Length: 164
Image 1 (cartoon, rainbow, N blue to C red):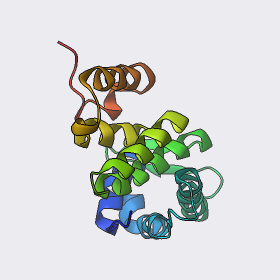
Image 2: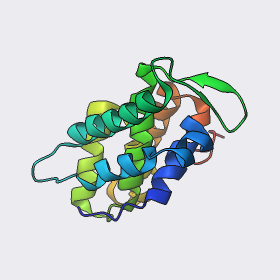
Image 3: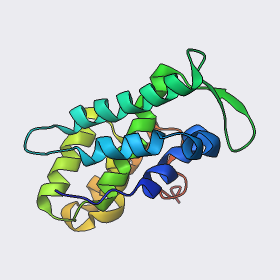
């Protein structure tokens, strides 16, 4: 499952959560991209990778912001990053890798298993958008319902349309 990981793509994934000042002014995207590039499916699980990405994010955030963890978002709003938000940010970073995976049965099964174990929105997004040949319309509708019931609308509104 080798996937080319661009730092630019990681920056795009991080920017909504951390703002351009943090993303462009620190090595946070480079550190997160490095963590993604270190993934070896023969020895790592996606859960292991998510932890490494989360740790890389925390390390840069803490060393840059200190214990208060307050940053400026692109809206100009000051926001405090809470520890319980880091898994969602790490999941967005993992989405960069998921998006680049070749569409075939092993990738489908890997993403499906991971999304079932963890509730990963990024894994479900890629399954929903790219793996039509591997799932029935009923499975896809169920996934859409799970997403709507468990995630804030602003996290999926650009790619999962409202039910008619």
